[in-house]
Amino acid sequence: MDKQTPLYSRHVALGAHIEPFGGYLMPIRYGSVIDEHLVVRKGVGIFDLSHMGEFRVKGAGALEFLDGLLTNNADIPVGKAFYSAMCYPDAGIVDDLIVYRLGDDEFLMVVNAANIDKDWAWVMSHTGSFDVRITNESDQTALVAIQGPKSQELAALLTTVDLDSVGFYALARGTVAGRQAIISRTGYTGEDGFEFYISAEDAPSVWDAAMKAGEPLGITPVGLAARDTLRLEVGYVLYGNDIDHSTSPLEARMGWAVKLSSDKDFVGRDVLRRQKEDGVSRLLVGLTVEGKGVIRHGTELFQVDRRIGVVTSGSMAPSLNVVVGLGYVEKACSKAGTKIEAELRGRRIPVTITRTPFYTAGSRRQ
Image 1 (cartoon, rainbow, N blue to C red):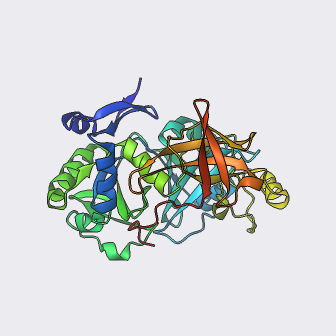
Image 2 (cartoon, one colour):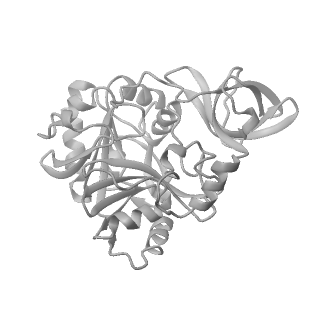
Image 3 (cartoon, rainbow, N blue to C red):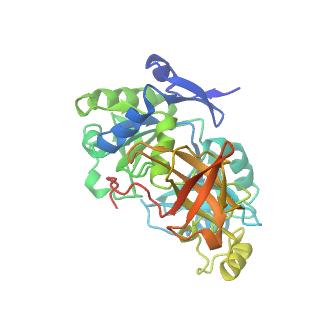
């Protein structure tokens, strides 16, 4: 049975269209997806992301444990965060995730909702003799996010934390609406924003306070549909669509989060090293539709009469008024500017390989 987040009653009261997603009943939209999308680009939107999973890793061996499990380096300063893949031995992706370093020997792993049980089993199967204590805090943790160019203005009304001191992919501990929180400057939209990690019982109070404080700023609740179009406009991948066990981080152009030059030996390293040396046969690329039609997950891609790949994500980009997508194509066809075609219901439409992000005018603070 699908779970409800601690904010489920708020979504019902707001008239949200709710559907199952990742094992939870989640708000897909509250009204117009385009309106929700554009308010994040121009003002501030609020998201319930409490379906995400949180694993706390503590102990003297926490850093060594994570370095053996993740493709990216875990040895970052306390108060910073990093993005990483977690791979199988064949270099297929278990999940992509964000990790926060809360202390010298304490980390918080934030994983995708649909992968919580799978990831938990995978993480626990690799504890070995490491001096670590790992707890699954997913059910006890809620996550409220505010995103958009007015997000700091709103956050400043909710906390006394010096937000100017919190850089991109950094965090601070403090209170939000009087409730204890981890405040991170992270997001999935290409805009500036903050994510508030709070206890599940405090979620309604924080949501209500943000909605009230944000009224003069035009705050709007945003569902998962607009979250998807926002992330697609800036070329962020979605697990289950663009990456999964059948794809490697190098194929997905996530090489910047794969530290092969370091001495650390992580799961999947040997295969990834060979892929780096030999090259991969396909690459994830951005796609811009030049004709009429919307490409979707599974749409086949052609060059003349030869199938060269497949679309993994596609949608109208509300900020740009064009249809864009992501997909895997043969490496020889992956150069930006290459003209190909997508097949839609028996007809071909022109598509151009495009560098991502498609949308480059976001407010995200580096």
